[in-house]
Image (cartoon, rainbow, N blue to C red; front, side, top):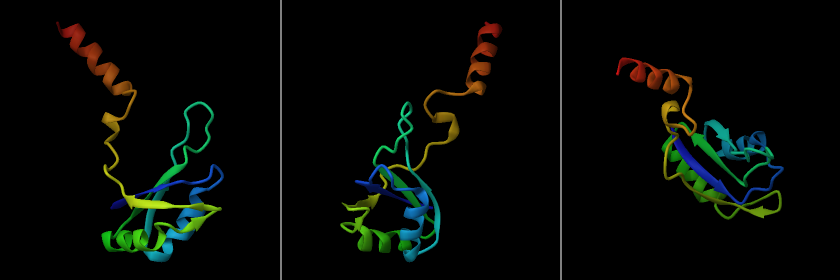
Length: 106
């Protein structure tokens, strides 16, 4: 999949709205709007993933500079893809178990 980063969103823009707007240019895989850890409010940007790179390029051409919810969108190719779960911040239970196992073997 090809990811686009969409900047300058209002805090009330929903994933459903973005999907509806972007699927005019091709099949959208998913939409992710990062939220503040404490307030749970939108951080003002989103990632829209397309199955086909050509559809993503068409969406950039059409939507960069378009107005949505009174804001001028900035749309570009995302620089990085999503990290695998094991590399996400905070680790996970599996990382704690592995470190305990290593300690007990020393």
